[in-house]
Image 1 (tube, rainbow, N blue to C red):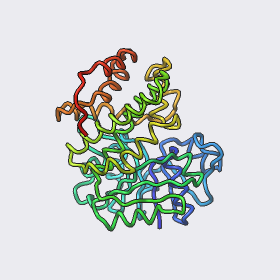
Image 2: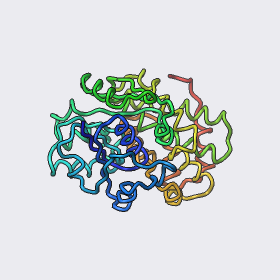
Image 3: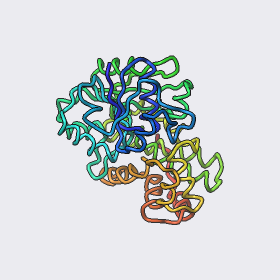
Image 4: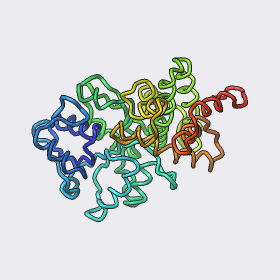
Length: 332
C-alpha cells in the first residue's frame, strides 16, 4: 500500500516511520527543503533526537509527488495550514482515497472542525473518505515503541476498520469510535486547557490547582462539544479526558510548555520562538472563544487564556479573575 504523508514534523515523521515499519510505501511532503534534504540524507530529525528515517522512507517538497496515485493520505500539517494545503491538492487532483487527519484544531472565523474544512474544499462526496486519528500520544514516545492507545473516528465503519488495521502495531493500539464530532472537539479544545495548566506550573501553583483546571476544563470542552452535536461519553474517553490528561501533565506538550514560558515572563511571540513548533492551542483558543460567544456558553478558562495571549492581560490578574467568579453549583 502506498501512503502520502503531509508534514514532516514530529508526529508526521513518527507516523511515517510507524507505517514504514509495517512495510507500507511512504512519501512524506514538507515545504522545508532543508529538512527534506536532512531526512533523506539519513540525518536525525531535529526534534526527535536519535531518530533517523527508516530505510525506504521517501521525502519530497513536491506535493504532487506525495499525493498522486496513493491509497491513503495521512495529514499532519497544522489546523491553520490545512485549508491551503488541500486547496493545492484539489488543483493537482481531487483525492478520493482515504484521508486520515491527525491535526487537532478548529478553524478560526468559520468555526469548522477539520473534517468539515475538508468537505468544504473537496465536496460532500469526500465525506466517507475522512477519518481522524486522535488521543494521548507523544511522538517522542511512540517512535520508541512505548505502549500507546488512541482512537480513530470516521463517518463510515469500513474506513474506521481500515485505518485501525493500517496503524495498529504491537505497541500502538487503535480503538474505533463513530463520534467524529466528539473526537475532533476533544482533541482540539484540550490544547487550550493545557496552556492554562502550563501557566499554573510556571507559577508553582501546585497540584490542586492543576487538578481543578483540568476538571473544569473538561467541563468546558464537554459543554461546547455537546452543543455542537458530540456525544458526552466520548469526552470521557481517550480523545477527551485521556488526551487532556497527557497534554496537561508534561512539558513535553508544546501547549503546556507554552503556558509555562508565559508564566516565566516570556511574551507569546518569544514563547513560540523558544518552542520552535506550532502551538495549536494558541490558534484554537480564538476559534473556541468565537464559538462560545455565538452559542452563549461560558468558557472562563478559555477566555482567560485568550486574554493572556492576545490581550496581554497580566497573568496574576487573570488567575484572580477566575477565582473571584460567582460561585455556582457544580453541574456536570
